[in-house]
Length: 368
Image 1 (tube, helix red, strand yellow):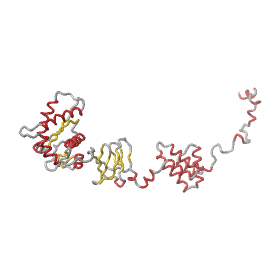
Image 2 (cartoon, helix red, strand yellow):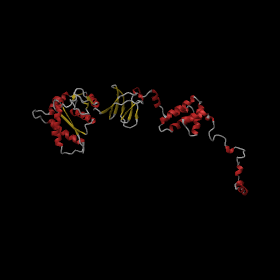
Image 3 (cartoon, one colour):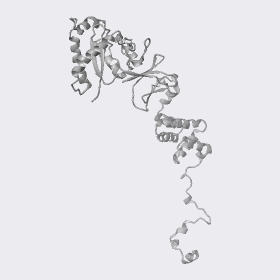
Image 4 (cartoon, one colour):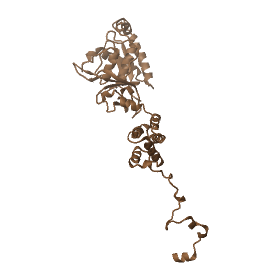
């Protein structure tokens, strides 16, 4: 069981009515009701006189009311003027006040004992009863609302736009230092020159439009993935665009110009990071070491770092600074077991010969 709100609209000359049920009086339903009203009429009026509902009027004022930005945007799209009724002046919208009473008596009263299982089912019943009201002659006139509409109001309506208005919410975000704005947890890019500036953003079900001083500066397809970024490369500084063009294969190929071990070191640095981009800067530093050291030394230092499993930029530069790149790697030197070393504390292989496997009794006695 849930309640519904009733939206009622009435034309000035013919008193032609439109009514529908919505879930709430919130902005999406308020805008949607206007769009469906225009489609029901088959055209757009010159002026709309709403009440002072918060979804339509942000701040009520007798002389200069503040219209909700989304409502104003819809009005601009259809080319209509929004002139809210003055507070506590129901006569400013007398025709719709009368229309509300008629809908209550002729529509809602007849539906009060019925149960509806969807909003669409309820609106179908409302539309049928409103159509009956519009086609019934006035008590003191021979014509009906429908006939007066076709005679007076319909010829004065402006044509509907080719595309239906798409509801959008307005935000006033500030551009972050990374030239992105955050909307509903997602980050969208704007030109980097707008860092720190406050911009206006209109978010629809499909698109995002960002304006600065009334001029559109960016547009993106809407993305609801929280914590992710949507970035237009043209919004980035030149240095950032170049960085974006890097790839693991390009970095590895570049490192390979120093030597094969340098390329392997770059691969290992990139592989060890959670995200490949996190290793790009270290690989860049690795390649630039060839400006301070001979390429052969850099490649040898990379070889040593790989062998010792300490393949980081800091380890490689430490190897170069201490000159360890010229030292043999563990296992590359002479085999000490094969050397003929003479020392009183060094036992030769003869000590472990078969005849010496069993200790002599006198040796055991002396040991005791």
